[in-house]
Length: 423
Image 1 (cartoon, rainbow, N blue to C red):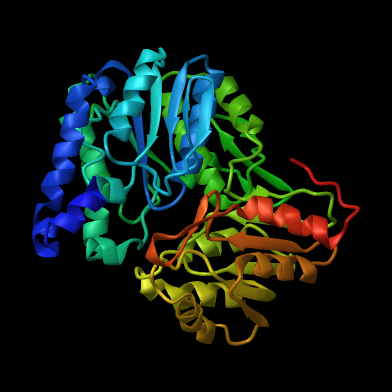
Image 2: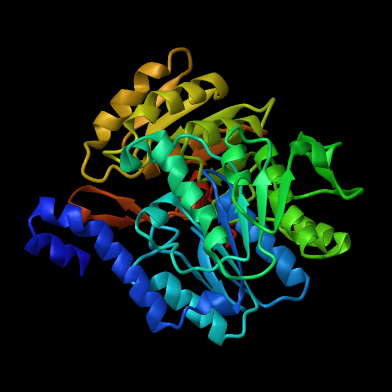
């Protein structure tokens, strides 16, 4: 419908009326489905990083506590025991999707719904008419600047999601805010019945050692299988909420220690090789640095590009510099160029790599294969940028089906025909 309207209506007119169009679509969906969020306990999670992981961890805790849940995030859509991959390349799809999802969750008898909420979704009013019981803020750093117009507008779009707590008519509303984030004060100002700040101080002592990650919560030592300081934050956000609604520490500990993989988030590709291959969604300067920091004292072979041709061009040299600072071997490759020349994107990254060996390989499969060919015993190959993204977005609307995980598995098999392919 939207593409058809673009063809019919002159561009300046369409741009002017576009916000009204999105608002009307959002309201119509809510009316048609009877405002389903009013009838379930809904937790909205937002931030620049960690949203999907936090929602997955929180869903695991709620399930372990015996609740029937629905989950909507960048990775998948789950209602009860039914789960399907998110193939939309967006966390909050439009055209009534969110209200339809909530309606289906209600019909299925779900009591708790966990929703990843994004600034892009808020920009198009897809967060509207979702009455929240709880709001979780993970963190914020520069992202989608060109789309929103400025960092401040991006932050305010995130804040507008939190304001759903203020407009919600539900009782006992709460906010769970990362108190270590410099922008936390904007979110703590939201009006709620209960306001809780979480901080790394709450989990001391803790360790982010690759082979010995643990943190302390409510006096209990919890050993997640998920590595990295960022995952301790994600676990802490989920655990803080769970504690606030009365879920026992034993359930929280057991659930967190049971989560062994979150698809596309520091996901290991294990085909029997004697080195590690990791696929991760990291696509910002900060998230890329934190990914590399999670594997200290390891020879790192890093595959990266810059997702989102035509936008956020400012971060290209910054991401390349992070790779230069942390990686031992770098492969720059294509991600999602859209209508921009993919070679131009890599050319804008390359000058920031000053003292590390770097290959520029446009074909992403060939880039991953080259990285694997460089690997030796004990190394780690880090393939970042796409995570579970199901397509490479190219010029003229072309969508090439893609999976970093499956491609890495296939290339491992080619490297050594004796390696057992694990599905």
